Amino acid sequence: MFDLDLWREIFQSMNKNRTRTLLSGFTVAFAILLFTILIGIANGLGNTFQQGFADDAINAIFVRTGRTTKAYDGLQAGRRIQLKNEDFDYINEEFKDKIQYSTVRIFKSVNASYKGEKNNYSVRAVNPDHQFLEKTLIKDGRYISLLDLNNKSKSIVIGRLVEEDLFSKESALGEFINLSGINYKVVGVFTDEGNDNEERVIYMPATTAQLLYGNNDYVDEITLGYNPNLSVDEAIAFSNKLTKRLKDRFSVAPTDQSAVRVFNMASQNKAVSQFQFALGLIIIVIGLGTLIAGIVGISNIMIFIVKERTKEIGIRKALGAPPRKIVSLILLESIIITAIAGYLGLVLGVAILEWANPLLEDYFIKEAGVSTNIVVTATIILVLAGSLAGYLPAKKASKIKPIVALRND
Image (tube, rainbow, N blue to C red; front, side):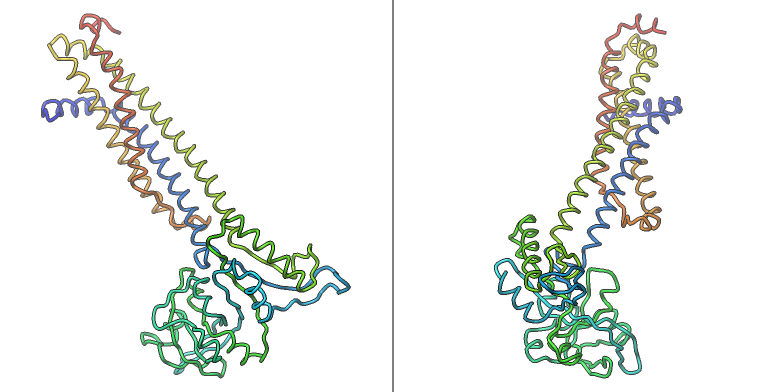
């Protein structure tokens, strides 16, 4: 294996037969290149789905209302269905064994100011459980607490970008911000796994918003986190039952899709999982097809190479070269060509993905990339295939008598 003359002879053979070497290498490099790009795009699509739902807990359920579109139970169409605190309490009591987290949501828009700095932000008035349903990560301080909720305190938690806008490089913790004429104390600063817009949000206790902005018990939305011990089908059944109960509670027609809307992440996750499975299956089939095409290509080339070198093999045998050395010469040449070409295909494929990433994002393919282990494994498969393709005919040729080999046309 470490015979210097053997290695020198291999590289001399590759240099002498450049066309043959380049043709063999191109087959392998193209197969690995195509394989890398396909896997990278598949991973990019997977990242798109993951980032699209990164902002909310995977077990979240959103309850929203609107206007009735159908007359029902003696009531006219066009009624506005309004959620209240009592509906939130009803859901928690009725389905307490199926709920892990729960919160109301009230949406407001305010003008925030601090020492001359001003900007408009969205306010979400929530319960403490909202932190886990929105995947809010506390950077400084704390989140809205149960004490804040009970005392209807003027405490707020602001996003990282709100702090940067109003406080520049200073810490906002413990400071007071004026929100549309009312001063609130900043008790926490958060970051969010979603996009930047999620870090331009201000959270306050739901009870505070109800008291200061209308003195009522109305809520805009109810968000739940179903028990994680429920299977996907059980979670979907739970949301269906919840929808039916709420429609009965508000006297809404069972077929009315606008008055009471329950969106369950379990349904979305199930659809995404099915799509990703189908996509992965397609990519595997295409990837295997590409590798098989590469294997067939390198195999045919190696068979041709051995046949082309039959006379050379006969001369070597006539000069006393043992069959093992003849086989090693062809086999190592095949491995070197396949390995180098596979590496070049990998590097080129990764480079193309890096270059194309900004363009692919326009087609909702984010951070397209590929695991090095996967591509290296594919390259090793091609190397083994190339080795096998070179070994079998080389072994056969090494057994030919020199006189027969020299007569070969």
